[in-house]
Length: 143
Image (cartoon, rainbow, N blue to C red; front, side, top):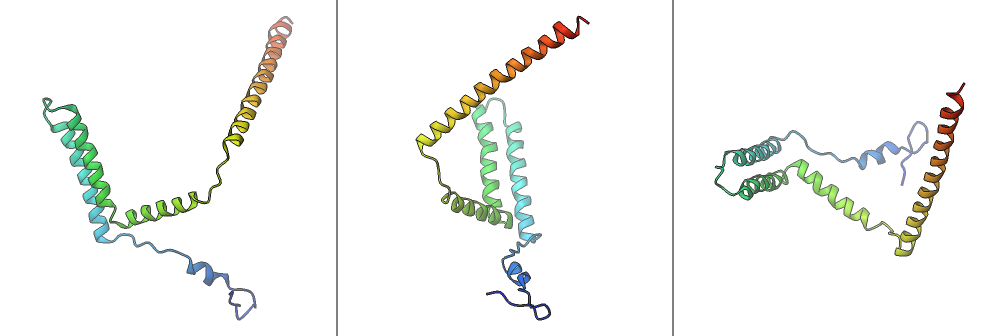
């Protein structure tokens, strides 16, 4: 229920809006340390890619970078930014459940309409181009 402001007898929406605001802690030393560690792991993976001898299979070079990225994402998962990503993914999945997808018949019908409109507009623009070419090249340049 809305609370009324004492001076104006108008609903005080500021209190309601502020109640929904999220506060995300930023700049914590542990988060900065973990993110720094994640960056260092990626740098180590890229360095391993270039420092491994040529005799080692190229797949292992690539696996070093991929493994470093996976481990770095795992480390970053436990930071405030990682919690934000998890929250975003959860909310996205929840919103995707609300989507009403068109039936196959509706999709086919809409696709055919789009194709028809594209063909008609292509013909129309081709005719306009032909008309302008004729006017400019045949009539105006003869003057």
